[in-house]
Image (cartoon, rainbow, N blue to C red; front, side, top):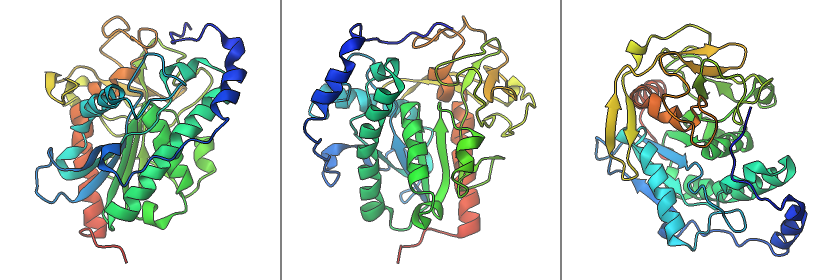
Length: 337
C-alpha cells in the first residue's frame, strides 16, 4: 500500500542530524508557567461550575510541515497557536463535565514517521519527556484526588499509552482513572500482557480502562497506523462491543466536523455504521467508501483523521457515561491525603 508521508530526500544524513541534535541536553519545559499550557483547568465548555472530573488531553501532531529539528518549537507562537487549534477540534467531546488540561509539548514532527524506526522512536521518546513532565506537574499541583480521564489522538494517543505504561503500578493514577481514550493508535494484546494492571474496555460503562480504535473502509487491509499482520485491540463506539457485531448507522448519534475555533460546523446523524474486523482489529465503516472522505495524510479509505469526527456524539455521550459510572462506584472527588 502506498504511504503518503512528508519525506526528507537526504536520508543518508539522518545519523549526522541525530548526533548534532543530541550534543546538548534539551532544557525542560517549566509547567509551572501558564504559558506552557494550551488549556489549564479550563471550564469554559463545562455544564456545571465545578465539574466532577478532570481531563488531561495530549494533542495530535499539529503541524504537517517541516519541523527543525523535527520538533514543535515552543518559542514559536504560530506553532503553539496551531497546536491549540487542533486541540479545540476535539475538546468538545471531553469538556462538558470536566476541567480540561492540555499541555504544549515539543511533539515530534509528522516527518519523523518517514524515518527509520530507531530515529522515530528516539524523537517520540524525547517528545514524551515533556508529556511526562506536564502530567507529573498536573498530578502534584492540580489533581487533588479528582477522577481523571487521560485522552489523546494519533501521536497524542501514543503518548497516552506511554503514560499508562509508565504509571501502570501508580495507584494515584490507576485508582483515579475513569478511562484512557487512546483513539487513532494501535495497542495489542501482547503489549497489554506486559502490563497486567491495565485493562482494555469491554463495554460502555467500565472504568479504569483503555478505549481505542482505528477506523477504515471495508476494503483496507494495511495502513501506517495498523499495519498488515498486526492485530489491534478495539472497541466499537456505536455499540461498545469488542466483537464483530455490526452496529447499524442509526446508532450513530452524530458525526461532527469542528472548526479550529471549536465550533461544530457540520453535523451528520447516522453517517455510518461500523463493526470490528476480528482479523485486523480495525473499526470498519459500513456506509462510506474510500472516496467519500479523502485520506489526506494517507491513502483514501484510511479514515485516521476522521476517528473522532465520525463518532463525535457517541464519544461525547460515552465520556459522560463513564464519569457517572466512576462516581457511582467511588463517590464524589475527595482530596488526596
